Length: 82
Image (cartoon, rainbow, N blue to C red; front, top):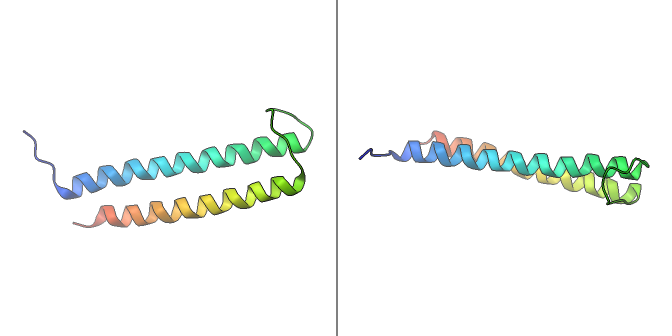
């Protein structure tokens, strides 16, 4: 049997979680862009809103992005520990 070291497990977990956070960021920003099209009168989805709602959506996306980037940085530091 192959024995895994703690650093290999941490590296794999950190990479996987970093990728997951990146996907979350991408999904949030996709919705921001799509809602901007709808708000601007170019309906690409069934959702709509006002410019104020879109602005709130952008702020939410920025906050989610910051949280996920901080988590990715923390995970990469954790990955480097031996």
